[in-house]
Length: 588
Image 1 (cartoon, one colour):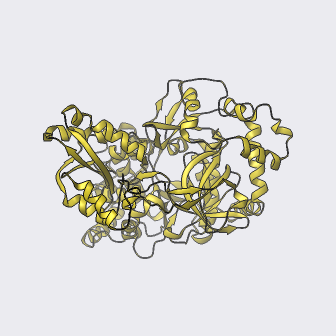
Image 2: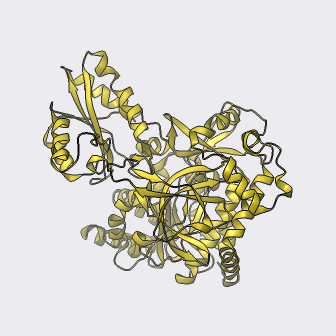
Image 3: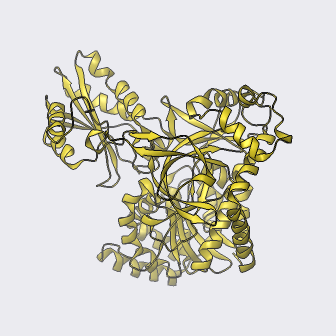
């Protein structure tokens, strides 16, 4: 990105941040003017003349009459859109596609409307972020980006809408190419590799082309940190074949998709000198446990760039191993399928300390103040043990306070509870800098998967049917997201009453794994970036021991709840010592 473009983006943002409060009022007014009269808003705003109302007065009215909403509240409208209803239900803007959000509503995949505004704000986010990164880590114009990105397969809804992940929509949009042109940095891989539908074949070709262009690669990136770690683990197996392809200008027989073969072979040519160098580097790296792999093979790379907060943090240690001691890890921007939220203005900050400055034009933001309840769920489980105050606008947030984010978007989400818990760490001008803390009510997550207590309960309910049909009883259960070994996987502990043969329990394990329908989980299972679910059968009385342990440590009987998910070491020790049988799912 040239200096003029970078300066323009940063100046633009500084002006927004200086007037963040008034910009937010105008953003809300614009959203309501654009979507005035849609069915959802009519029930709250009726015939209010939003066009002629003062922005501040409109904000006050809107916040007083439109209720907070969850996805479940909006889901009936989104389903009608998916089924082909053309009445303006949530937005008057043309809905081009439907995005699959990580997470579910009552066990079904969540749709989120996707419009041209979605792609435009994504482009704006990436340009602004690139401006701040280039200030700290300058890149060469015309350089390459080694991007481990993957477009998922799309499907059609009943009403004919294409549905897929938000990243898939973006990679297929004109804005993806425009971003490369405007930042003057270009992805190594062609469209056919990104959209192959085969994770391993795409990854192989990402590496082959990334090494073919090695001297030109300016940085390495993927949407999530775990994607980079998983890809580099595959490279440890692929490198000899890749070196052979570099040497001869060929493509391994493992690449079977015709479109990939044609596009990649069109780009590469024999390079014995490069292949010999890569081979010698890899032989040395293999002997040293692949420490510093990235800077060794891409010596001109300035940094590694990805989402590294929240559920990605367990992967940072391995990513630092691959990156060596000196290559910076830069946290990517803060957003969700529903909306972009903020940018990382300080790319040099450690991932554990990164903050994201809210961009006040992306959506209208509110913040629900959260306070910890005195009663905490047993076992360190992620219970929703918060006390809430009334939502406040962006201009009223306080440093050090924790909040849940509420969104009103251009795409038809109104006072939508995102479920993210953040803390205000400071301000840039008058725009808050947010530190992401966790997902609210989220209890099982390895990487991009997001499963709530309700999702777990639905999966256990479906998985336990063979058990119940055999005449046995499920006494109690809990779970654990095991990220100690790669790939991480879900462990579910059951205490049962009655005799059950192992064939039935193996079937329970398989059906429970298949019952998690969250899109992030399904994709991760199919690509083996999440391993097979493990079902552990514990001896009778195990959950009583757990209860007695917590009561013995000060909890009262009236306060005790069996944690549905835990990372508590003592609790896990009890569970594992009491495990008598283990089964691994054969789903996927």
